[in-house]
Structures are given as C-alpha cells and as structure tokens.
Image (tube, rainbow, N blue to C red):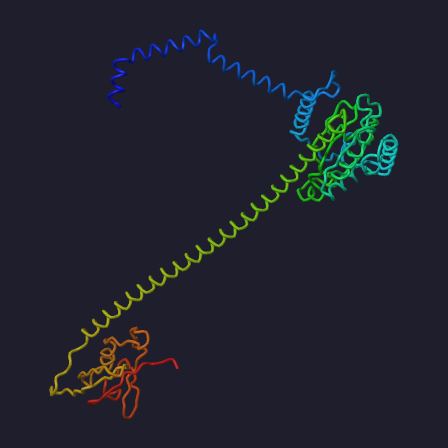
Length: 445
C-alpha cells in the first residue's frame, strides 16, 4: 500500500495539486464570496438576531398584537426583568434625615398615613380588595418579613400617575394577583408624595429612583438583622436598623395581570436563589470553621506528640549518656583497683627470720568467693584493707562495684568488726595469727 502511495505521489502529485487549485477557484467564482468573509457575515447576522431578541419590552407600544408578537414581548419583558435583577441593589440604614433609614421619625404618623393610603387603595380596587398589605410603617413590615423569612413586596403609589393609573385597580385588585402576593410575600404600600417625610418617597430615593411620576413596584428582602449588625461591629447609630437588598424593581406599567405575575414569579425565584445562596454560604462557613477547628486541634495534637517524642528522645539520649559515663567511671575504677593491687607490698615468705606471718583467708559477700594471703602482723593494717579494695566486689542486685566505705571485715568467733585505724598494725587491731575474716556489705538499715 505504501509503495502504491509513493508511486501515485511521484507520478501524479502535480496533477492532484492542480486539480485542487481548479476546484477552489471554481467554487470561489461560483459563490462570489470568500469563505472567511461568509463565515464572518454569518457570525455578525447571528449576533444581530440575538440582540434583537434581547430588546427591552415597552408596554405602551402601538400596533396589533399577534401571538408571535406576544411571545416576543414576553421574552423581552423577562430579559428586562433579569437585567434589572442582575445587579441587586442593597442599602443600609443611614442616620441622615434626607435618606431612608429604615425607621420613620414619627411611627404613629407613619402608621396613620399607611392606613389612610390603604383605605383609598382598597376603595378603588376591584374584586376582593387587593393583597393583604401591612397597615403600619415600613420598619414594621420589614420586621414581619424577617420573622416570617419572606421577601417584602412594596407598592409605591404615585397619585398623579398617567400610564400606571389603572395598575392598582385592575391588576392589584384582581383575585389571582392578590392571592399570589398574599401567599408568597409580606406586602406593604407607600406613597410617592414629595413631602420629604413620606416613607414611600424616601424608600424610592434610597433605591436610586429619580423619576417618580409613575407608580413603582419592588421586591426587597432583609439580608441582615439588627442583632447580626451589632455582632459584626457596626456603630450603635446604625445597628438598630435592618440591612435590606433590592431583589427586583420596576415601574407599574404592566398591561395585564399575566405580565405582572411573570415579573413577580421571577422576583420570587431570585429571592429564593438569594436565600439558598445565603444558606449554602452559611453552611460553607460552618464547614470551614469546623475544618479549621479540626485542623487546629490536629495541629495541636501533632505538636504535643512531637513534643512528647522529643522529650522521650531527650530522655533516651540522657540515659545513653549516663550509661556511657557510668561505664567509663566503672572502667576507670577497675583500672584503679588493678593498679592498687599491683602496688601492694609482696607477701612475706613463711619462716622468714624475725617476721611473724599470718595467713588470712577472706570470704567475700557473695558467699562463694574465697581469697587468702599472707601478711606481716607488724605491718600497717591498711595494707590488708587495700588488698580487699583491690578486688572487684560487686553488688548482688545491680552488679555495680562496691566502694570500700560500704565494706567491713568481721571475725567469726568471736564476732568482731575490725576497725580501720590509719596508723595501726594488724596486731594492734587484733590479727596476730592465721584466721578467717568475712567481708560484709554495709546496708543502710
């Protein structure tokens, strides 16, 4: 096969290359467009179609509404809501009187205005009277939402509204919308009267709304309670207010209840996403805290284990050094005793003229070792004691060499301990003839 390929390339390669060039030139002449240019135009066309699909839906568009147009409008409306909810706005309490601080300066007045607004709204609403609005201040509504762990639906009514004039009567007053909002949100209504004191007006300004000619709807959620603010180290002036986040907001320009319910559903989904994210973050922080605690505990245990191992190794090394030192001292003591034995005077011969010789047998503490030697009874008694000291007499328990101060010489009959007098002779301490002396170990008791 390889030989055939080499044969074709060798003999017909030029023809194959020429054929490929002819095919390319023919295709280009037939289409009239370069393939790269065609792909670029297709990409640009897809991008234009995508942008067209994402165009924002405008409620007051004119013209007939076909099913296809309604689907496009709904899709554009959903994209508009997602863009509004994509960058959630959050605001915290402020001590300035020109901005919303989560607490009305006069709670009684705030409650009175809220009840008056609700009375006027309910009077204009059709159906069952609209959602179950909280007839009190915004701070009270936020506290209720925090306790119930639900988002707060806010309707900010513009008395002089034009395009959104029928929103409260036709949409909020419908039974389906009212039941949905009451079941899924804590509802509160406020006024956009520009009097500098109305809670609805201050709330709209805090959310960044500049044009207040039309009514507004918003979904906000409490993301931090006063106790959490206090625990996180906020100042006392702001720790008594809740920190809330704007989940969604829009002008009340919905043409029908279906579009408004789509907006409310997306807002509720986004709030549930925020809640789940906060729960997952809290769980993650708890897991990280537990892991850090376990790691620190394991690290402490490792440090303690290393410290114990170090102490044990130090004790082992100390024991080795002590044993080596003890062995060295014992070797030196053995050498000293051997040298002492070599330095003793020679034994006197038996029958020597003018010398009284006593043959003394020594019985060592082990009960089996016996040693005998001849001594001149008129020589110093310390020679006899040095003879005993020159032997390697060991303790029967630990096999260590016994020093001379723990040994004594005792006669058997009668029993008598021979004194160690520095200048006395053997005769003077009571040894004047052949005898048997017992070497005894001196115990503390």
